Length: 169
Image (cartoon, rainbow, N blue to C red; front, side):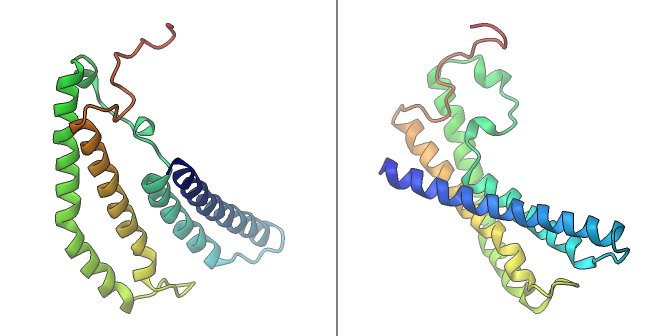
């Protein structure tokens, strides 16, 4: 199972690398066309924006770990493992509920957006925004797994032990 998870993580990483590469190449092409041949290309800006949008949601869904997110966890870090599990369960169920409740309306809106296209590249907006559905489903799955681990008393966020202050070992 771990090998499958690592393989999937590597493929998700490949997608992110491809998106960042597309964004970088579009950016370089825009600089070249604007400043070297004095003929700016409008579609390169749109390509950068779309690649950035997909990179952010794709990376957040599949590549960032819980420890990579910004947290305000002063209270969470100051309590024991049992209370942390309660906090983790509450947070997980709140996130899952909020995203699950929003999924039908989000899917309807994304499906509706097939009638619109981006102005320069002509990409349908349902494709552009579909990455948010991927993100929402991935986050729901991640937090359901986190809740399951918390119920079982397993480490679920790498913070089951009190943290050492920065700079001290």
